[in-house]
Length: 222
Image 1 (cartoon, rainbow, N blue to C red):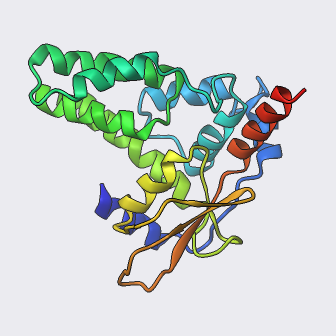
Image 2 (image 1 turned 90 degrees about the vertical axis):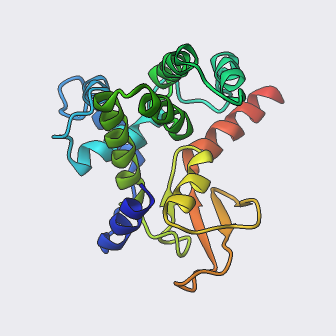
């Protein structure tokens, strides 16, 4: 996956920042090919015919979905963590990992860490068909994020909808950091450890997530 992401990063020379206003109009329009329920259904089926424009509407359009929020429910995640912390996993444990992962992904389809747990369980269960589908879904998410920028500056920041995607994308690109992300308004800056390309850090645009936090704080202070 890491080599794939690095190769995908290299191929994008013409980046396109998401236009959230246009995306919102398209994903909420029932007559549009980008209508969100249609796109989500195709993604969940690992539809290989999804193009980059559709993937961008899918990933960035999730910020207009009712389930997109900063305070995600931890109940199912806690149940999953209990199983993951076991030193060894029985077949039943692996099946539960898949089941809990599916419940999480039904509500939050871009939980990449959860998809990784699911891949672990599917691999050990020998379910190659489901493994390939989840792997393909992850590739689609990475391709979308990488199409938004190169992360080298604020002007060419990677656009992500979840803070967790920052470290995941960094690691997928074969880069390391020895520090936590620094918040800069709508941006996060992640200082990198020494690397072969001489990049000091990566910038991420977290606009929708920051807006939710600000809205939540504003309502709390009313």
